Length: 359
Ligand SMILES: [Zn+2]
Image 1: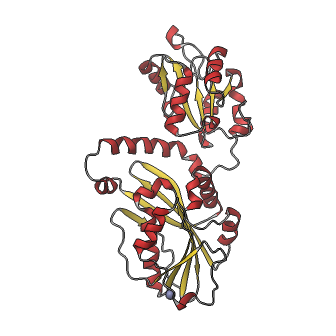
Image 2: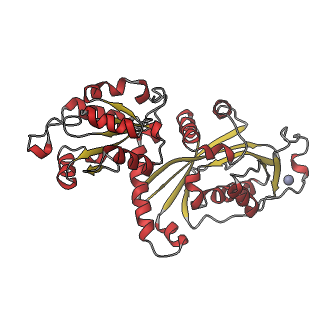
Image 3: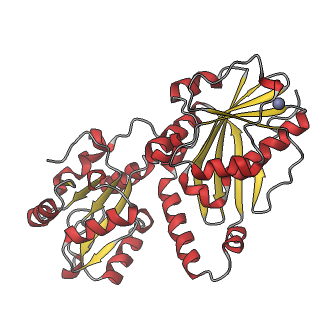
């Protein structure tokens, strides 16, 4: 039995007499009720992705969705004559969602039964439930952030980016430059921490790339003048990547203490960790302080460890942080670096709004 408490991340719609009134193939006058349009827009604004599984010919059906002004809301449409369970399975696979995160709505009991039989974890709903969907707990995420609101755009941008990458014949470096990446570092506000929290929930990678700080602790540190909690977001010419990382820094006399640096696995290939470290090193150089970084090596954060080492961090002892104790956890290494000037990255544009200057 499907678990109703698990949030739905993607809803797959049947079209004829479910999304719209009428049967396209029978030449009906197709009508999209305003209330259904509202359901589509509401779910989209909550960050729930939507797709289509329809037994129809692709071209005229997609044209109809365009005519109704809702085509842009549907990712990876499956419009054809195969079994709907296969359509739903492909959509989940492309999105890399577990079947437990996928829902299906169709007016035909036989179609729902076919999907339920082959994909028992997919939750199935009838057309009579369409208007009730936004009120159901599984379609009501606990928080809606800027990243949830732009989630569909992030996926659409990623599809275009991936497609372009697959036909790009030059070296990776050139492709990276062609993206016109922008990294934005900002002081975290409450909404930003919800974005980071969401990121940690969606990519388990996050907490493995450094020392773990719970979201409630980060929230408290936001208000603490001795700490800087910074949120990293990225975008490129295809669209937003959303919040991709968090950095926690304590600025002490003589040394800055980097307590946490975590980035999403989605931006590892952009060298985001190295760019952040180099920016921080340059800021510390300007401030005339040493840098100390806590690091917990794990199987999964090898890339991050390489970035620290490559940036010049070592385990050599230094007097700067003496008197500040050692890490309580024996697995945590305390890395150290004497900063020097670092150039701006040549693979992306950094926007930092004057953070970590002065003092
Ligand atoms: Zn030192």
